[in-house]
Length: 113
Image 1 (cartoon, rainbow, N blue to C red):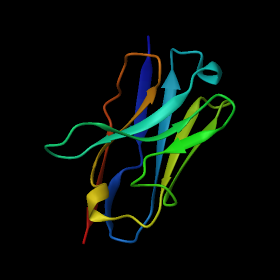
Image 2 (image 1 turned 30 degrees about the vertical axis):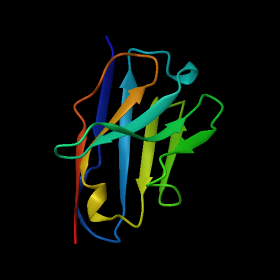
Image 3 (image 1 turned 135 degrees about the horizontal axis):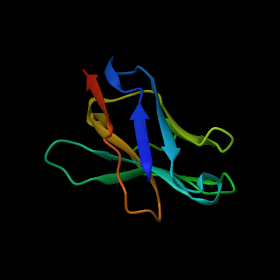
Image 4 (image 1 turned 90 degrees about the vertical axis):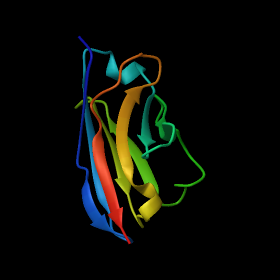
């Protein structure tokens, strides 16, 4: 049974930082590319960051230079460091194994101006 459990969200002022974590189980984690998505109110879900099995990464244009995705294969964890947060970063953040059609419950990030 696939489980993706996101945590680490919260309320933060603009310019602040958060670190999101995602615990994955039920999938062969080390051979799966992982990604973080977010969904703002009344907007479509968008890809924020992607990390391949070899550790290579890609980011959405709006978060480049501010967010960092990483993974720990020994712990089946994927992380997203959010720095220099802006109010437009507000939304629910979800991790996902790229090829597995399963979404966790997400973690809410709210950035106040």
